[in-house]
Image (cartoon, rainbow, N blue to C red; front, side, top):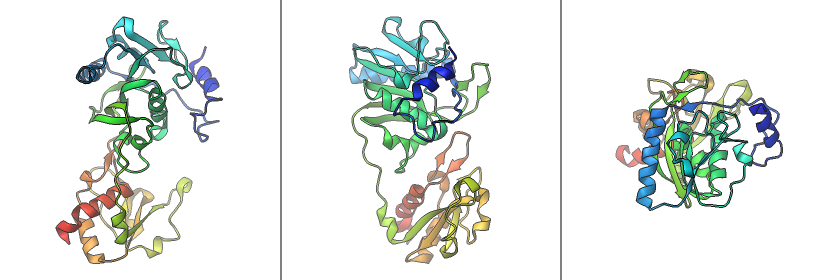
Length: 305
């Protein structure tokens, strides 16, 4: 049966699927892992499991694809699942609606990412229900410490290892190489620490998003009140603090309203190395969040003020 038909039928009755996804045409997001990258991740995960003394478990590969991870797992201890029929030995089913047999499990693989990582988050939350440990290749959004980061929306697991992989780790089923940045992360049962609080910065500045794009138009009512602006996304050269939103590239950024110590705060923000206060995204641009601006301010206030 067609993989998309199988998946869409399973998703139609699943509470794991966000409302905004329903009714949309969503492709299968088949970015398979290169064998040498899978081997690197496998060795990393195996070493970690040995250090934890983990044993007597089976491996789940929830999006087995072309088998880069699956082929590294001992044959007697592996279950491969994929909504597409890459191999006869796989369970052809949507993983989010699959139910495991009784036993002890860990998971390893490269789940589909989805828009802004929503599908990767759904996969790891599903895995967290029955696995003690997880090793996944995940989108760059899982590195953020901001409140909205998917890293802080994983239920019942805590992050214990994260590293950026080389940018050429994926290949399509047709053999096309995909240059997309991604992370290798290992998670274990437990609770993540809450995201850090930077409420103290609210004593000095007020931040809000300004976006001129039609589909996300916002911030227009406050734009005239702002003292300065900074763009949200940049590639290459650091963004500059500017006095007029017309100088913000790509039509999306942040308005900053100074509450006190205006000249001190403005001086601090002009000196920030934004490469240290931004996240590298999938296609090599960098994103600045409100979290980054607040952290940069508080990290440097007592240095410069």
